[in-house]
Length: 350
Image 1 (cartoon, rainbow, N blue to C red):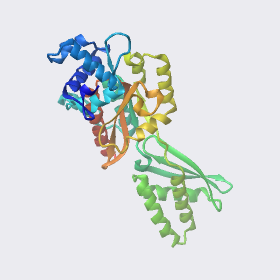
Image 2: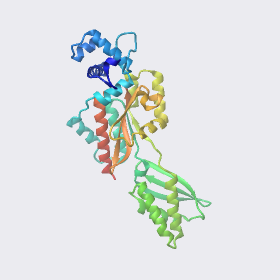
Image 3: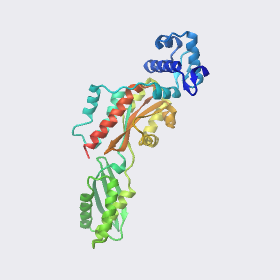
Image 4: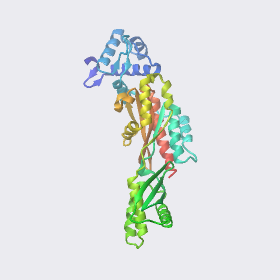
C-alpha cells in the first residue's frame, strides 16, 4: 500500500488509475479489470504493475472486489476521493440552462414552482427529485382569522404561503362576539399580510405594546391571540418528491429489500428531512455518498443537494436521490442551476 501513498495522499499514478476505473464503472456498471484499465489509462504500464496498483488501492479502501474475478468496483471512500479531488464539473450548456429557466418562470405561483423544481430534477436526471418547502420563518402570511368556538375558546387560523393553513385553539378570558372577531381578523390581516413570520413576530410585539396603551382590550386580546397562535403553531417541515419510481428500474438499486427500506424512508420523511436540514447551511452543492448519510435506507444511494434562497436568505434545499453509481459530473451542475433558478423565481413571487 505504501507504493501508492505520498504521506496521506494518493500518488499521481494511483489517482489516475482510480479515476479511469470509476469513470469506466459509472459508464458500464461492471467490475473493471486490469486489461480494461491498461487500455483506457493511456499509461505504458505492465499488467503486473496495474494489478499491484489495484491491489494497493483495494488495501487502502478505495476499491473492492465484489467477486473472485480480478475486476474491481469503487467503494464509498473511492467515490468520495473521486468527487472531491478528481472530478471535473463543467457548466451546463446554454440550451439546457435556458430550458430549465423556462420551466421555472412565467406566471406560476410558489406552490407550482416548488412542484416544478422537483419534477424537473427527476425528469432530467431520471432519479428522485426532492425539494423541501421553505422554512416557516420565511413563508409569507396571507391572512389571520379568528373564529368563535364558544366557552371562551377561539380558533386561530393562520394562512401562510400557497400550501399551508395552520389552526390553533386558544383560550381567552372572555367570550368575543363574531363581529369583534371579524374586526380583529381584518385588522391583523391588513397589518401582517405579505410579511414573513420573522417580521410578523416583531410587528406583533410592537403592536401589542401600542394597543396596551389604548382603551381597546379587544385589540390587546386579538394581537395576543395572533402572537400565541404563530408561536405555538410553527408550520411543519415537509418536502415535495417526484420520480421515486425511477429508482425501481435502476441497475444500481436492484435489491428489493433495499428499495423497500428506501420507499419507507420516503413515506416517513423524518430521516430524509433531517439529512436535508444538514444542507441548509452548506455553501453550494453538498453530496452524501452511501453510508455517509448515516441512514441505512440510503446506504446504496447518493444524495446531491443544494440550498435555495429568497432575499439572500437560505429557506430550503433541493436535490436528487439516486444510486451511488451516478454521473456526478452531470448531476452536480443540474442541481446547482436548479437551486439558483428556483430562488430567482421565488424572489419574483414575494
